[in-house]
Image 1 (tube, rainbow, N blue to C red):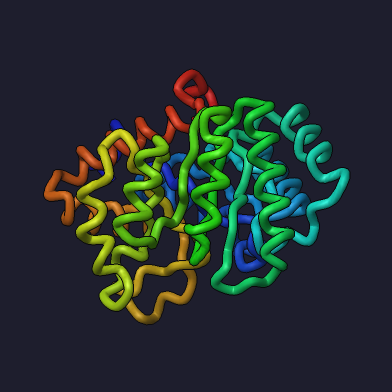
Image 2 (cartoon, rainbow, N blue to C red; image 1 turned 180 degrees about the horizontal axis):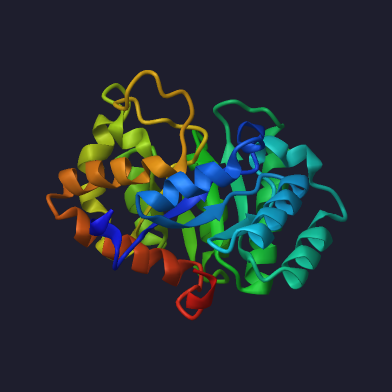
Length: 272
């Protein structure tokens, strides 16, 4: 896709360790590259997924990954988990951020107290290692924001990924100098309309884009499509560019620059 020749798109969050990609990950990556998605951050949700993500990164040079414990897996957090994460980071240069970590009070799959322990523990790791943090927050702003604020000055860069919250939450995160990740939720005519206005308030140097594949398939894609993939990032980017009233090429260039800066990849062109 010629629009992305100079500034290819960067998907900052794709769950490529999900079992739905086991049989065709290579084709998924080829389809993404064919439409200009040349770099992807593989999101990890557990130690086992982190190990699987590391293996994918070793196989495909366009990939890097996060390492951490999602709030849905907070019960896995124990006395040795921090040491496991630190050891993985030490051994594997493909790990570019800590996470996905945070709080999810929408489903409450794990007890809230345990979620907070895992969240705080990973913020402490990120501060110690001076790595960016990849954050998840759903229906938990009232607890999430104060915890993040406590540690914010010790952290380097922070992204609140898959932002779907309200204006007050967005401004609070921006006040803490967070990056904001926008997904295909903005394409949802039922639930995403507020994002179509809120995205205009995100400073251009704090905007990141992602698919969250295989989740959050944009609802305005053909109904026959059943699984979200990185190849749909241009569709999401086009939607965002439309609501920002800027050329798609400009959005591509800026979010590509933002992503490389966020994950400290600006000196890593050799991995592309």
